[in-house]
Length: 200
Image (cartoon, rainbow, N blue to C red; front, side):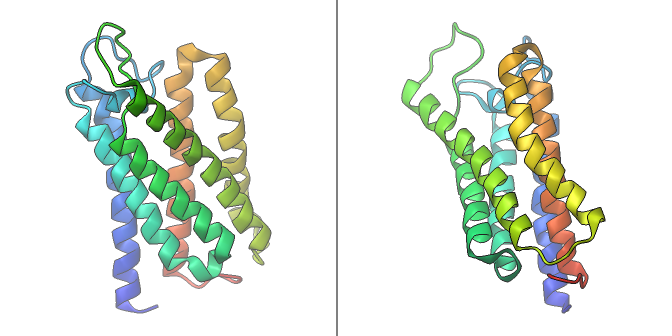
């Protein structure tokens, strides 16, 4: 691995880590009434909310980092894996550009922007789930220490959104669980750039 590749991998990791920190600290900037347990990350980036810029920055950096990673991993990931994860990045950026309605029903909002955010957020979830499946099916590496995270990513992208719909009082915490698994999965894929792994 060349120094240039090492620096590039470090750049991707920097995007992912900075994004995760932005989303983790975004609730600190929220006005009274916001709860990270019941309110989602999207609501910390909602329309008309002071401090929403930090969560939007988190979405933006996450999207850019994944697009960058997909470009670097295009041979290992194959066509469909690459396309789906680039789609994840694009839709994540769209989620930063278009914001959801505020949780405070007294505040005005743009319903079209709210709809666009919902579409982008839904597409993010599908892109991640199918992107991981596409890569799992392509892998020639049968090391179970790697595959457990693939299984966790697929399970989280299916089970936790259902949990969010059934238990809205903890929707924020469940969604953050999805983000945590996604960050871990992409970080693992980035670290694989820095070492030789059979099948990659």
